Length: 150
Image (cartoon, rainbow, N blue to C red):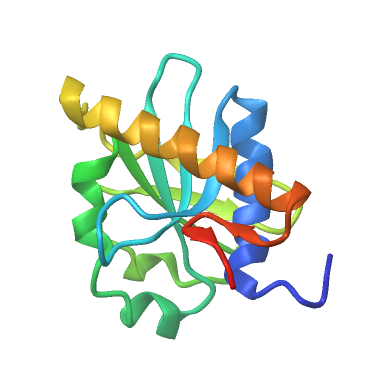
């Protein structure tokens, strides 16, 4: 595991690996709307959209004031935490994933709240664009998901 990865990024890595084993493609740090940035967005084999917020500590969780704004952008919402996280802090009615840098396990499915067709289309397009720009950035380091850096 890279020493340069932040704790939340380490959790995201395990989450992304686990979701891939279920047929989901994932991107990290996607912006569904101005002022929001989700840790992991997953696109499933049937077009389902999941959001996973990775919380590395109690302080990380309690300082998050935006998570409820993410609910309208996904079919299911999950928290991803490590095995030592006090899960009793997490709100009922949300999904729960226990993760480390290598894998994860879904302990509780987030409740289904299917997106409207127009919203789903927007999210799938954002997902595709975000993924394509990230890939482009590996080939051309001057390219970021928000454009070309100076």
